[in-house]
Image (cartoon, helix red, strand yellow):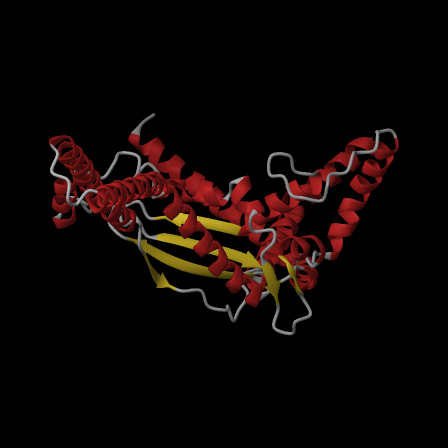
Length: 369
């Protein structure tokens, strides 16, 4: 193709495309009443949907943990070395990475421990446990009853042909939850979100509930439960060492007291005797008392160091943003719902005018021939 032919072809294609777009725009403009009517109905439906969805309130707290790289081998480590204790940070203390915090909060044991938390609203119309609140006091859209009705009927029919489940003893067993308990735990898991900034280690905890006061109070509870879980995990070995050291300290104190008593009784009973056998026994008892005293003082030092180590490795969290009662609901976003419905109605009506309507007319003509 020559250069002149190309120059003649491309302007023609551009002109035809422009003419097609103008024709399509005229076609839509001619049916503008249909588009406006569809958008008007969409606004009404969007308002009904937006006001039918229950309000949800979200409360967030921000925690900044202390640096995990802090060494425990400073001046306290020097004192511990004198007492024969290694105060260095063990490898297992930092095994609980902040990346695992979301998994901890969504774990079944953590969630089931929240079931007995007491919750109440401003008007005190709700004053019960979290489990009962999620089970009996949750509002749902009106269409939820319609969509769930067939499944409930199917479940009722199936239950007629199944053996009756054996009831438990009324106590919560995280190892074997009932269906209702498992459903409540899953619903609670979806309402608690934890995000961790990998660069700074800042942890953000968000709890969403249908009542603002319950949302704020439960956020505080989950925050302290998470802190206690992490603290117990990281200080577990140190606390076990402390208990063992306290046991050894008690035994050493008892042995020293007994050795001291035996030595004092022997000396009191044999003050005027100068026989070598008595002097040898007295020296033996004195050596036993001194040895028991040395062990007792050493264990006393180790006990103080064990207590200091528990305090030293206990993580400290700074609450950057505390929990406050939210004033506005976080969802649903009524504006976005309206925009979405209007957009879908506009696109659907334009698609009907440009494509579907012509396809139906062509199909009718073919069937009539």
